[in-house]
Length: 310
Image (cartoon, rainbow, N blue to C red; front, side, top):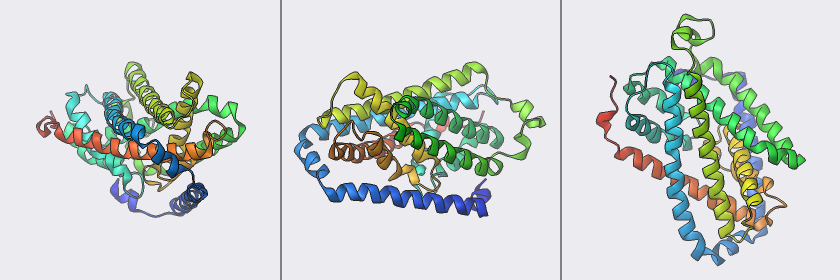
């Protein structure tokens, strides 16, 4: 798998070029808004409220990472009944921070390597990663759909993200999924897909993660003086899901940096003042980055002796 990620191909080079262009445009949008001013003054004026809200948000976002690791454990249950939950949380939390490395794929590589200590095969780990990506993107697209239908401009962003996802999966799947796991192979029949119950539990955990993250975005918007009515909460959840989806499908965007901030600003345009939307995007990036660090730190406290193959 590591070798496949290093190999170059015209498709991968095109994907990296398009990803670099998308990141440049995103940073240009964010930089333009910063140059126009207003965001830093707003943050400074409400720092007494934002500081505790940011710290609490980072802690809650870090804890929400356990929803993702619990879903990953459910998806790995296709191969054999999973072991103690602590081991899966430890592996997932320790590797999730690697998404900040250039390439936005090394958290998957890390789980492919460390996951072997849990007693799962490389094939099962690769299949679980693909299923996780599929479920997360499906949930994000579903939560972003009402926002897209309400605002044609956001609908275009959703279509663009969906096209990027299709391109990414078409380029990555043949390299990430072993040939012996393709449909019809003996290994695929033996490993199989997770039972419906496990898939539904994983789906529910992914929904809970996005709702929690969207709720945090709403809380930070309220701390910046934005409307706190329930429609604003639904808008924030949809905008968060759309921003996550865009950041996920852009090749090479480490943790979606720049991409998600730009999409959040566009998605919340007209709902929040431009300086509020920009300040919210910047503060939320701080919350998620620190939160991922909290998740990793908590995972490191889990006893490594529990990460053992049975």
